[in-house]
Length: 311
Image 1 (spheres, rainbow, N blue to C red):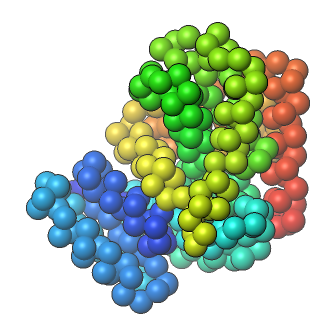
Image 2 (image 1 turned 135 degrees about the vertical axis):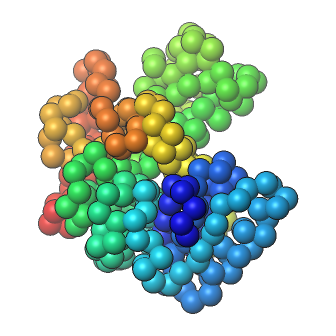
Image 3 (image 1 turned 45 degrees about the horizontal axis):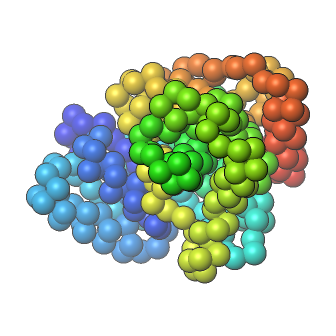
């Protein structure tokens, strides 16, 4: 695979991982190695996606593997491996099982790709990023988690439908851990620059915020045998693109805090600047006392999981 294109490894060839691979090659961001423990699945999906290349006009190579040799010298590694939620499960129920899976993946990846940037997608997200950072020994700016882009995309979609405007006009701001304690900031969420607090009643905004926080569970309940994957994959690929193209794009991600927002030594969702070296800056904004209290509660919930894993 010596093409001169960036090399993107996706670990986990389930719905999320396969969709990440699909979006990556459709955007022509690089070559893809798809890794999974199940024999034949990454190979079959890679072959299938490669055969869409002539129609969708991409020349990226796709390789499927059950091992890690093919992943050597990856630029970016997206980790989606782990168990998906079933109806009635919280993200946190997955903690110990997925910690074992992610820990094993990270050890194998970093042995072969010392300079990679790791993007974590596995739930419970914030705790898994902390685990990956600890296991990898990488600088924290090269280990980041996908959650805020997904949460804000859900929020943006609900706002756009409510106001019957283009999703392109809507920006949304979400802080905190991924899950029930996420902290959307309506006063920073806008439609063509106008804060949604000017356009929607408090009751309506509260209902949309609630639906956003519950966004994953709503889909789990409908699918019954799995969890969301199109939007999570699209969110991870937005991060891949910002990094590989050195866009310096400001996106909400799970990043390591060293005193920002009053939190130290923990991965939590905040706006960051993403570029070729990973998380290049944490963007800190002034919070109202209520927002700060909600953020602290969210960070405390993440800290509790991290402590359970003895990180």
